[in-house]
Length: 327
Image (cartoon, rainbow, N blue to C red; front, side, top):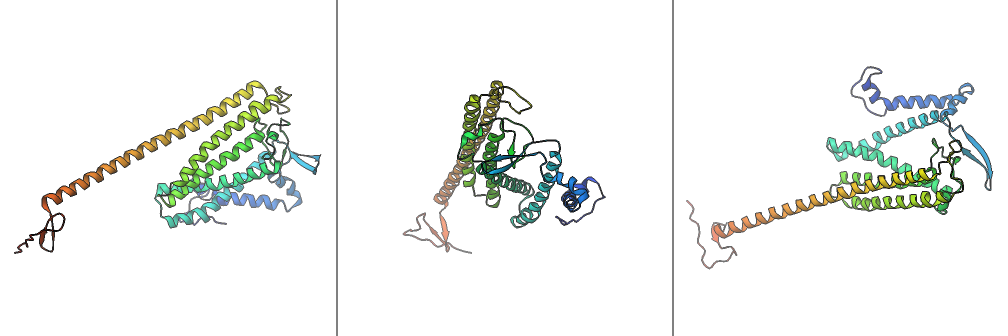
C-alpha cells in the first residue's frame, strides 16, 4: 500500500527513507498485529495492542458494566492506536489535502499552512465528536453535578485513562470546548486560503474563542471551587487516586485562571494590533486616493482635454471651439 508517488529512491533505513515511507512501515506493523489475531499462539500477545487489559465488571441498574483501570500493559495499546493515527494522517494528506492543493495553486508557505490546518481540523473534528459522544452517553450535560460527584473517578466506562487526575470528568468537558475552539480557528484558515476575502469565519471564531475561555473559567470554579470543596473525603490518597485537598484545588484554580487569562491577553493584544494596522492601511489608501484625485483635477484645470482634434473646456461645452492645426 503506497500512499505517495515516489520520484526518488533513498537507501534503506536512511533518514530520508524513513521520512518518505513512514506511513507504509507503520501500516505493515499494523497488518502484522492484525494477522497475529488469527493464530492461537500469537493471539494473546496481539490482543495486548488492541484491547485494554485492566477491566473490572460491575453490576448496575442497566446490567453488567465493564469499567477500566490503567497499567503498564496499556503502553502497547497506546502504541497501536498511535500507528493508526499515523496511517489516517497519511490517508488524509494523500487523498484529500494534496488534491485540493493542486487545484488551488498555493505558494509554498501557504501550502504548508493549508496542510497543517487541514490535518488539525480533521483531528479536532474527530476528537470533538468523540468527546461529545462520551459526554452525552455519561449524562454530563443533563446532570452537571455528576462531574464532581463520587470523586475520585478511578474507574471509567469505555474510555481508558492513563493517569489519575483531579480533572478526569471535568477535563473531558474542557477538552471538548478546546477542540471546538481550535477546530473553528483552523476551519477559518482553510476558508481564508481558498478565498482571501473571506473574513467572517474569523469573526465567528473570535466570538467562540472568548466564550470558550469564559465557560472554562466558570466550569472550573463550579466544579473545583464549589463541588469538590463540599466533598466529605478531602485527604490526599495516592493509592485511591484522591487529590481533593485545599492546596491542590487552589493550585489547579490558579493554573487554569493564569492560562486562560494569558490566552485572552494574547488574543486581545493581537486583535488590537490588527485593528490598528487596518486603520493605518485605510488611512494611507484614502490619502493616496485624495492626492491622486487632486492631481487629476489640477491637470484638467490647467491643460484641458482634447477630443477629436478639438480643445474643449472642462465641462465639455464651449461657445468657441478651435480646431487644432495638424501638420
